[in-house]
Image (cartoon, rainbow, N blue to C red; front, side, top):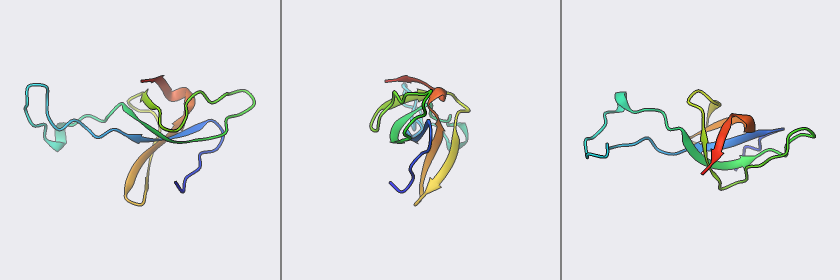
Length: 89
């Protein structure tokens, strides 16, 4: 990974959006919701006040508007503070 987060930031690869409903209906691109879960790809070192609790490979839940989207080598990632993560799945 060419991106190394600084401070208490975390780089997350969002899970793909749902393609079908539980009943089997196909969801069009315009109606797909932004995923609220993803995989941690890189973690910053933390700060003297913030100990990093997430690690690379963790599946996490985060807020709907959390983070900033970045695109690297055609892949879309989110970079956010650890405090924006709600839970480790």
